[in-house]
Image (cartoon, rainbow, N blue to C red; front, top):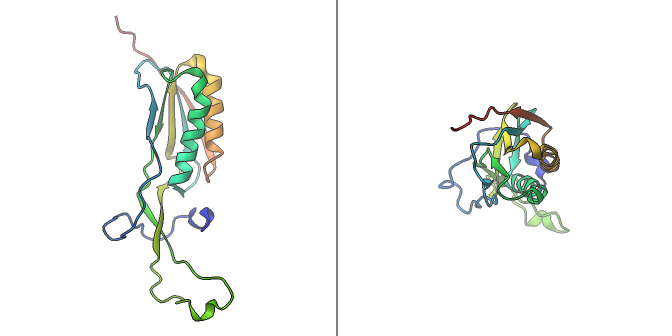
Length: 169
């Protein structure tokens, strides 16, 4: 099975695990890492520039890559969020491709397929990952988001927002 076979969404998504027995659980270990703090003044978002499906293992790889680049600045200096959830169950109708397989294959008969993975369907402009940090860590944050975008199968645009922090007196 190749990821490129599932990149472009087609047809109605199968989202209920009740109708697909044996559907796998998501590989995303944590959807938020770091310390949630209202005083962060910099937000960096990875947004998609086209409609696609992103498999759950690609989302986890992007999160791990960003988190690994951010560990030198400290666990309490950033807040990383995975903004999409892989609901769509991907199915694969496996065919035997060895010698003598013509007598074993079923062809298109019962071609619904077995569950093989999960994916998140995204549209143009969807926020995939969001990172909040202080402006002093801007270079490390941009580097982390660049390494995370390399793990995703769609063209990515990085949006940098400066937040106004309300001073508490």
